[in-house]
Image 1 (tube, rainbow, N blue to C red):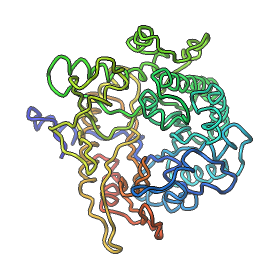
Image 2 (cartoon, rainbow, N blue to C red):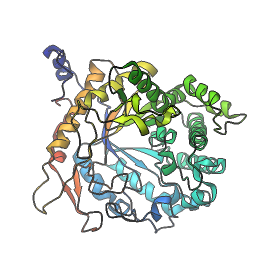
Image 3 (cartoon, rainbow, N blue to C red):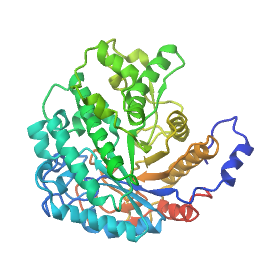
Image 4 (cartoon, rainbow, N blue to C red):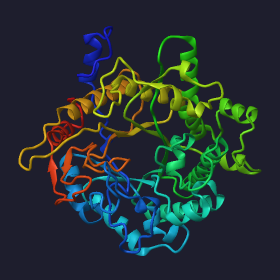
Length: 474
């Protein structure tokens, strides 16, 4: 069971046991299109950057994934049986718009009509993400992805069209998955960046352009669809100081400011963090900030603050070079936390960090908080007969849900829901099927598609039991 430390009293623990979860609380699953759909070359879909990435010795290609394009009914049924009432999907930009800026593809849009209608028929509310790293290939090759304002315009055009088409049925939206990653070097892998020297100027330009996208779509939502909620989402990996040395504390705080708080401040105020603005000025960073951009950013208004959470990390300031940019502190100074257990991939398991994020976000910004990705990747193989005994996954989710409830009932945070990541097995973000997050096993490996059979794991039945009572008894 999740515990908060030696000073935690039994009386405080009883607070959680006596509280009832909100009746409108969302429980569910989150995925991306390229990790689920497959069907990469049918029904008018044009290519994305993922479609041309080859398999390697330790990864698959993206051509089939789990074939949810054809098997979505097969995946929605176990979600319904687990008592999920929300499924966060992504619309594939290249599936619905030819080459990202051409004609709209009716067959691609019709697929999402079928998928969303099938969710609603099962009492599952859809949440839609508009971009999850899969830049249309043409925009990557010809315009260098989000380095170009032409791509910004194409994305806003696509986003507005999807909002117009689906807003009658989809009431919760996010624009960018893990938006703060565009302020890290990961941006060069996820923003359609195909040429350049990966400079700090380019990094800041990519991020700024994505903020212009978010701002314009935020304004469009609130002007035209006031009953629809749009959230900002970050990949929240809190950075702890490796020691109590003042330098470690200082640089950990600064890393959090650039990687996390800067974006939260943009979502809630329409302005960059003062510390980030000062860094841009002092270091003469060219982020393509043009006349009129301030007015565009001022339109930003998030209705909720969403985030993914898998782990925390620590920062050793002694490892940082003198000229290291705050965006890159973790590139040089990240260390494994010696006080936390680890996953099969060496990630820190830290449910108290989950509680701390939720409470911090609500205390600072007074907007509803929504963790929309949480989970643990495990190495698992099915013997073809017996359910997988994934007790580590059960413990992970139990401890994190208990931590979330502590943030709600002990700290007073308003939380909209809890969405696990990839609870039907999908390839990981690096195309490794062996890193499994699901409560349902999908029978395939990196290089053998097998029959793609869906097989409930032990955690499936745990979710089913826990959520039958809306999480009250966990």
